[in-house]
Length: 168
Length: 187
Image: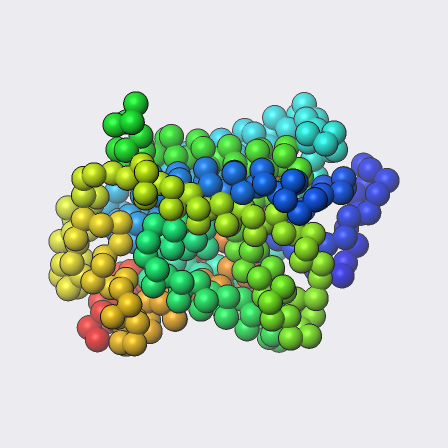
């Protein structure tokens, strides 16, 4: 475990080593009461994935063959909206609904961002899914994707097993 | 209204909603968008096997599992209640390319000829499900994020590592589709 201390607040938040999508909330959370809002956000996310056909293997093929603007439009818009949102949160120091300061973390360079990313790209083109759409594909009734998900879990597990031996 | 919802949603609507997930999660409780982390949490919860990478308080990160559970449910809701009655429309060039590779374009979201259980124990199934899934799981964790964690959350926070990672996501995809597919799909 690594302690991540934020200089702006006098409290420590503990995360696993380089947890990539951390929970920075300080206030205590209850299992169902606090987390139900993430379930609802997830449902919205999943609906968009299906309705904009982002989970479609064909759309991913179109994207990598440069035959359609659709996926580039989706990702591009999401990034622009995200950048503006984060800028507004920082600029106006907007607090969370618990009244906490929103924390951001730098992602320092490591070789995984090159080698691991390339490997993920290979897998993305075959499966037609990044991890999010994997879940939505299963929800859409393509139950064989459960095998893909189990295999992705195996991949994550093997990474955990050998990560000390890989260049970072 | 219902008719409009049933149609495929345009890219700017989808992109805007996905982009707004970033501030939504941040303001709901200081949570950072990143879906591949859920795979790590499942490993940590179910088979940690005394591996240091999986020894952490996964219960603290359980919101992420609620989130991906929601994504799965969202898939169910969209498919059961908001489904598009028409076939998916794919760029003609892609249809031509795929047919040249003997992949049927069947109007579903995914080619049923590939993504079915009958295919599971064939060489193609091994490639599409087992090898593909493994590369997604291993690659995203090694990269420290996927399309959501790096491309959307990371770039929103102006991280150069995330820009670099996103370029290599695309590079991997281009290599697979243009260089490896013609060779792999021969089997």
